[in-house]
Image 1 (tube, one colour):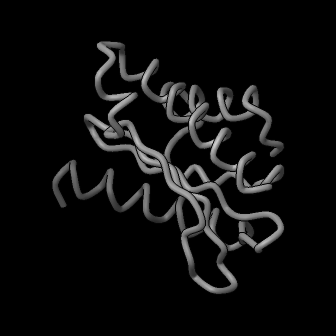
Image 2 (spheres, helix red, strand yellow):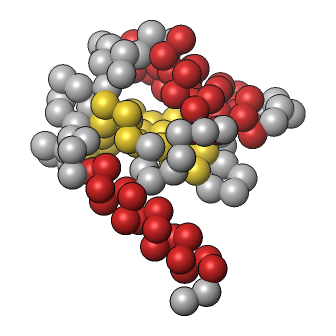
Length: 120
């Protein structure tokens, strides 16, 4: 195995370990974060039906137009998902960091979502 495969394999094992306990419901959806090298994406997912209720990403025009750091983009996405959730009547979620460390962009997104009014 090369280094990339080891890292990916490790993250997927952590992800499966987390997903055993983190389950989204219609009342309390799962807030799943995906982080790529350039972008960050977040979805609110109802696992009972398998539907994505809401989504936000750093590719949306109001976030992408601003020339800010990736951590700043993550905070903007967290604020955006909190606004969308409040408009849809969702106040509490279950946070799924998707195998990523709770550090840097993932932490920034989570803290901005909390400041925006989401409880988790």
